[in-house]
Length: 84
Image (cartoon, rainbow, N blue to C red):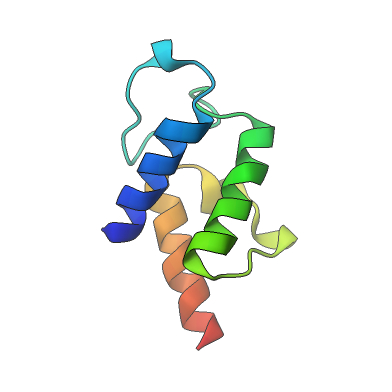
């Protein structure tokens, strides 16, 4: 839950393309809904690597891993498991 809250805060404070779209929920598809753009994804990856101390490999940057806050939190969990 902590990962989701940290991601949500960063996305809403730093990446929202258009604040008129409303609030972001944990299940919203961030790209399809227009909350963030491709540059935002790159900033998000840098934030995740620095904040959560994980390496995000280019082949992992997929819609399955980065569609929503929930899918990103699940990706972080899987990534941590592999790094142990």
